Image (cartoon, rainbow, N blue to C red; front, side):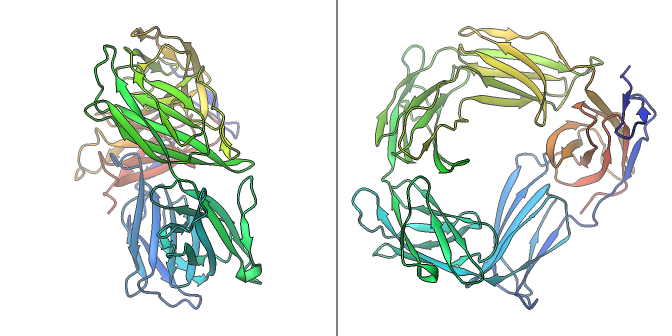
Length: 498
């Protein structure tokens, strides 16, 4: 039996009440197409405008979570985005005008982007060591449209005519072959045409003022990290993944990642390029089932680092809800607690680190999970639903050890939502279709059983959840509803969304 829990309004509902606490009958838009129309300030359609669209797709769409779409508007100013999405961001530009970033978190069938006059920013790109101008450097307004790129001329000068004249401060990204990229900031004033440049930790070299201001941007020649990866007996490891991660401080509370990734060749060798030499980096090597290794490197133009990987440990277990049923779809995170601190770097080097510190997986239909390729370190295992940590366990594996944990049972205070789906006979069987649970963002998903039932463990009673029902291995949404975790739910689909 499930415990009885109060809802926010004080009512009490039984976890085993008859199905029907919340019901949705194919509450869907008639179309899964979003039609974007680009217009000018007078509302007239703008043909051949460039668009950049970012979508977060549902978990039900196998292999696709985030998708960038680029294209141009048709003669009537329209551009179609096909399929269901959880969140969408869109920008447009044409000649010397831009439409500011529009961000959506609920599905719409139509969206209008209005082009407004933009401002032009000018500058020159130089080598940070020699001071020589750099031709062919690429400059984009990173926080507006990453694919709207201009190039520097032979004398290093550039002019980007499409900086939004309204809205937030924008990041200007500058990159060039053989150099590490750099971020600067520009903020425009729509009233008097002035613009303000800034760079972290050091003043930007600004020439002129107001609308005539231009900036000098210095790029460092790229750093090189290289070496060899071998196994326990000294044999070369082919295909080991080698990743580098550093962070350059942008503001007091923000940093830009500087990353590179490659695979080892037939001799076990790797070579990473495109990194900033003036900041420190973490270097992480993994080749399961061997134990991954993590080292910290100081700033510098070149580092040669060899690795010998040893047999790795494994951790496996199962997560159960308070009734003892499998907690399918719940997140299990493994965090390394003794990771090395960031090495010293230049003035812009930040100590932020993510690489090699944690990995996560999702419990399967039996509630089972596993991690492999672990070194002999201190780890903390966390069972989570979204940002909420439901359980913690400390684990210290020995080299090559296989650890089978006792069952991890969620606390009685957590909720398990029970539900069922039904569909008209014209639809395919419901077994293998997917239920996605959300609160602003996706918190996980579970598969529907052969009898049409599903259960979602590890929920709370703070506010209701949105449930979305998707066809098997597809982005086609069949129905959706909102429900409290203590409710039981029935979802009904009479047709497939097109």
